[in-house]
Length: 612
Image 1 (cartoon, rainbow, N blue to C red):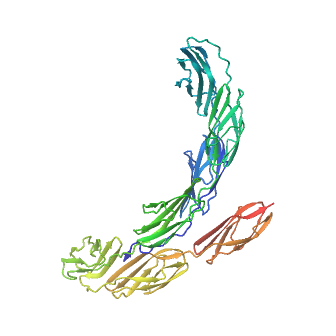
Image 2 (image 1 turned 90 degrees about the horizontal axis):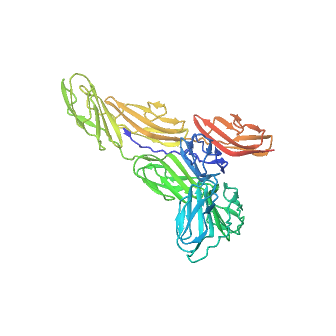
Image 3 (image 1 turned 180 degrees about the horizontal axis):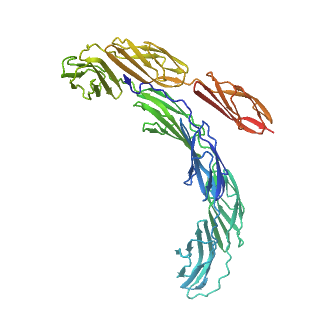
């Protein structure tokens, strides 16, 4: 008998925890950035996304940003147990070196009687690509050199805003056009000196909080200044200092004014502030992680870094945005669960492969059958009748003479003399059961073959695990053959067997008598976990160079092999080694222990600190 998905054992192995740094995180383009993986949990592959459409699978890639902008960077660290994705929002700030236009213009005449026709000429520098004129009488134009007619007398302010990809600059000349009524007297317009706005800032990029000193460099004797910093703040000082507390791309505008008019200069993406705050580190638990369907599982968020949003994927097509959801699994299977925890600084996704294991508690069929006759002369026509219980939905008959059938109740004709064994496999969605009646047709009796069943105690535990198997077969078997799933076997009726390695083992019993045999396989029936846990201590853990350190193995589970990595390129296979550090630095130490094929590793970052 085969019971499909009968025993459920979940995985407790760790997935990676993604972490990384970059240097530098801000500067002018093209900006070359070195990224360094700092993930824990022994990842074996990496996938980087740099925010500008580029990616890499190197562990510690170098990437060049050619365009100005604020870029979010993500790293997905992967091992055989799952993956973890960390996104740092607005992490890399690349500033622009583009210049904004300097607006200037002239006119054909500034004063005359109505109607006054004026030709305006753009004299701006810095390669503007767009122009916007306002003539003061409610009319405007986007031409480079427009011609405008004033129909009514009055004094009119004229402004021109020029723009390119680096920003914009606006000049306004107050009372610049003087239109005289037909009966009035024409007077010459005085020479207007409007400020020409210019400014600098230092620094223009960096990590928050970023303190920036702004310096007015305008000409034309401005008497008033108005700054807008792009984050909702402003100032009327000539040379203000402003602090940016949030990451982002900020446009800065300075309007310099005097009695003759004003000039407004806007620098697009003038200040770029990168984010140095950490995104959350996703972590979660579930209870239970294994059981029979329907299985109700409570998930608990254990993430750090103050997440404000959660997205769970349960592996069966269902999702949740609750912090601590409860989910019901209705079908047997192995389910991979992921949690994405997010805050304003980014997001982190943790995926645990095959984390929830749901077993099937429904029974497969119990196969049985009969026939209209069991002996006779050739040609002998026999009607077979399925008598299986457990609601089988499929049947497979083999009649012993090379013939077979998938009917429930077939009729078969034997054309040659002989002694024929008949086998029926009955199946449903929960498993299958095979019954063979040896020598059933011809001279054989109709005695029953065995119906196999067995139990084991215990069915799970830590290696080495000693299990007592008990035969519970009916039908008076006279011989037994056990296979334990790890290469071992036995012909005893009730054997005792020891599993020395961790794993999930399927057990098969074949019970036989003179009438035939019956085979039962319990898939994943014995679950053996690893009792080996690596642990160690060291003394001293800090001091001046050269520093001699004694390391002591404190592992449990009786390891028989040790491998130390001291973080400076040296290793040892002793149980309790002594190592001398000859250079200053902070060293990560790892110990890997082994017994009978079981392996456990402990790594301690920056564990040994050697000073001058």
